[in-house]
Image (spheres, rainbow, N blue to C red):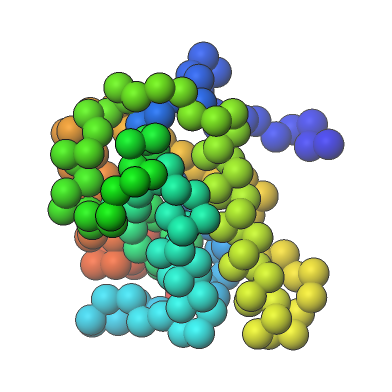
Length: 179
């Protein structure tokens, strides 16, 4: 369907493995639909609030995931997701305790395609609600793909958390920046 499109997935990595994943999902053409960045950080508009709420609700739809650090930027979303069967019966503990819930990649296999399913479900839920709000049925909201990085160890996790936390303060230098 897209003959010139190159996969960004690791060719020999088993994406059914449990562990932690850093996700970036971008708005189509990088349009700033979710709000703006000011002196006090990201100021989300109603569309941005929809994106934020849908992200926070992911664990209610997928009991095997735990949210870690995340941010909704004006035209993209960054977040860390942890996957584990052990999370199904735990209360939400918040990002500050998430690192103690795993060591990275030591659990059994994920259900096939679960990471992609979660991203597709998130994008679909946000698109549906935004198109209802804006009365734009069928409008494409997101880029077709998403970026994902397999979190390899605690230093990698801490580097990514810092990147997400400081993303709003680096907005004008961000590769997704649009004025």
